Length: 204
Image (cartoon, rainbow, N blue to C red; front, side, top):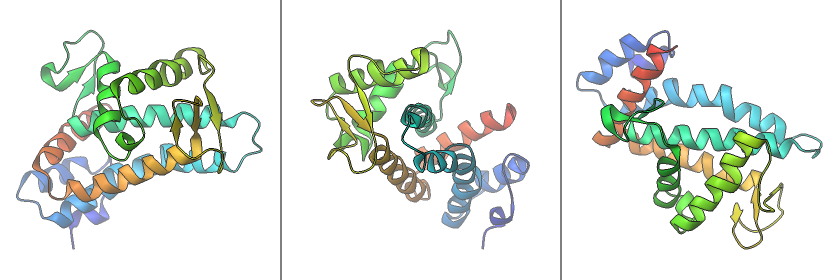
């Protein structure tokens, strides 16, 4: 049993940080994942997406995909333990300001996204025509469409130019679950986790 199990983030982060900094067990990291990360994205991202997925199919796919694109960037930054700061030099002090490389590198290197986004050219297309277009213009570009349910056979289809919001959510859910397992045994992920959640706590 880990003492972290009964704590919450951000309120108890100082106590959680002490445990994680002093020979933590695999159970400590497992509960840190649940308390700090899973609970946070469940309430802020995953639960709202689930509610919207049950909607009337009248355009809510754009909202879902915009949230998913934001979540993907957070997961990419978390894996490195990097934080966004406008104007910073890439990688200096574990910070970034240009999101393109962070985003595209993540998509082509991390499973299960890398099974769908198989080249940097595809990653850049998704970044420009989907992620950036949604964030900056509230639409997709260059004829990209948002599909739902069982439509299509892939989460992202670069030939037919669609993103299936529901299949993409399955990729995100799978990544988060796999990350939680990997966190219990990877020192690099653990150090990155500590940096990221210390930063989040400092701004909470």
